[in-house]
Image (cartoon, rainbow, N blue to C red; front, side, top):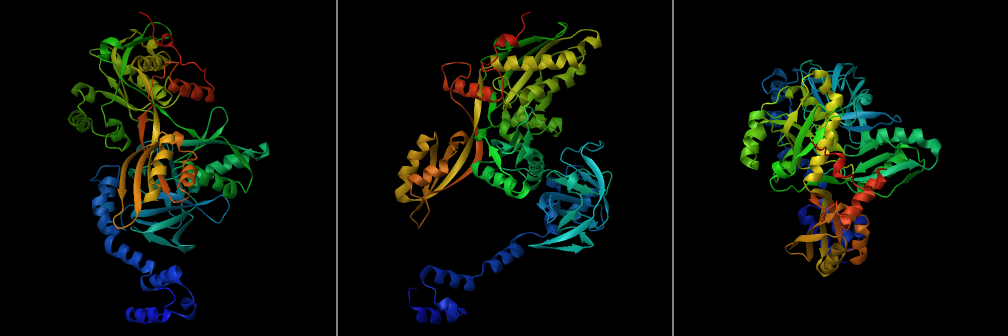
Length: 559
């Protein structure tokens, strides 16, 4: 195409593409780009694809309603969602909060699945922690305005029927990130959004000028509303922590926080911190070798418990929601038995999932004929939630551990076996069981996809080896000199990885990191000579705990 404009123009006329005088001055790549823009405009192609290939709401909801709706699938609400009925009860899912032109206010953006939403309508706002029949995470409010979100501008409308996306004004104070709106008292919420990545990288932030602290607190609230994935945590020690999916995600969040939500007030941030998980490797025949006994403070109650790792693949299934506490017990125990080879008795007697009642750890009752056992079930589950949220090694959450209660001795008088006696005892017992079952530390791992030319593949291996990464797939794109390299890279080593990679390949390699899985850190955390022991100590020091890992005697009581 170089400088042969007349020939190009003649050829293009046959395709019905005409160049104006400004286009004719372009050369090579820019001319090629302009020709393709005129011949195959992207907006038309995209619009056609959406029309041709995406099912309409009326079609899609007929087969999606089972996955979306949390309640019974034969009630009037699920029928209305299935039929996409504009005259049915209102069900609307708010999926994100969009900052509005008013400082500090948000437009709730979502989609109407059933019924019609109107300006001034009174709705029940069901947050992510709402459970039917209770008043937790429930608000009843009027919608101030309904808007159609039209690209850069918004149109105020009177009402919007189901099948459409919509913006709502005036309910942003009652929603954190997502939620369900309904006008029916018997509606269940729609299922919450699941993300394929998890927030594993954290930074602590503080304002440079202490007078800006209120701005920071307000800014963090608004940041956590505007980004569906980011988590803003205020620690007990008074520090403010932002958790994101990776270095780049955090960088963008911090820039938004400083410029948009704090009006340019300067902030200081710590080095990025990676979240770890604690697990156990397990010992042979744990019922004989690894049972921990803990006595309650008044010495009248005893708990016997051991820990073992969950079957392979089960923690991931729990994370993906394939196995959950809401499942029917019979269906769940059948699945656990067939797919994961769990013992039939144990699968039926799962007391709880933890931490946060949904995590990838199980509390199982393996006792036989214990009097008053049901009275202490709730106390044991509370102790289990506490223990799995902050493990014994370094106060990180646990993952992939099954705690089995094998025997309990209880006082006959109910006043001596209340929550105050049982909860701390259960927690100590679980910690002791964890330390007896060969505890291990787990670190998050990124899946890195790198696109690069053939000659730079060698230097990529060098950078990855220095960062404890390993390549598991390398393929050439057919017909191009570009290679696709896939590798696993520990998140802890990923800081500065992009810069190192670009330096080693003189900017020719493009990496993309996505959280993939958790892997066990090699070595015994309890052995002071191992590197992982130093890592545990540094985490404990950062959290303000005693540097030494507590001894088993703190949790294990002699008979």
